[in-house]
Length: 213
Image (cartoon, rainbow, N blue to C red; front, side, top):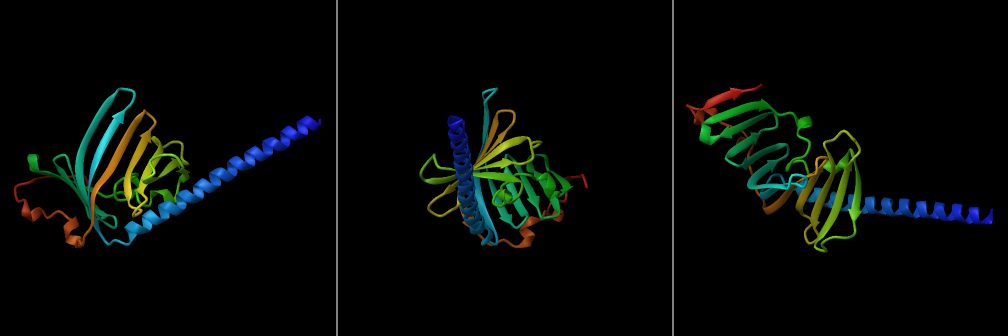
C-alpha cells in the first residue's frame, strides 16, 4: 500500500512537471512570436526575396525556385516562375507574360491558409505552440501544431533570428511526408502606394483576359 502511494505521488509529480514544461515552452513561444509579429506590423509595406523548396521524403523528390514578394496589409505582389500574382485585397490578377494572358479571380482570405503575407500572425489562433530549446543557436525555433486535425499539414516550424527578431524561414510539414520550406533572403522596408497592387488592363491592349469572378 505504501509502495502504491509512493508510485501515485511520483506519477502525479511527473505529470505536473511535464505540464509545467509545456506551459513554460508555450509562453516562450508566444513571447518570441509576438516580438517577431510586432517587428513586421510596424512596417507599412515591405519587400523580400525568398527561396522555396519542396521535399517529398516518400518519393525522394525535390523542387525549388526563387521569388520576390511585396506586402502591404493584405495586399501583395508575388513574382514566381514566370508569373506575377497581384492582390489588391479584393481581386487577384495572375499575369502570365509568356502567354500574354491574365487570370482574374476574387480574393478569398479563408482559402489562403499559409502564405508569405500572413505567416507573421498565423500563430494567433487555431494552434498549439512549442518553443524548442535545441537547434541552431542563431535562431529561436518555434513549432505550431494545428488544433484542427482535418488540416492537410500537422506542423509549421518557424526559425527567427535572435539578433533582430526577423523571420529566417518557415517550414510546413504535410501529412504525406512532404516539407515546404520558405527561406527569406533580402528583406527591405519600402513604401508602396495602393496603385502598385493593381493590374492596369489598359497597359496591355492585346492581352487575353480570363475572368473567373
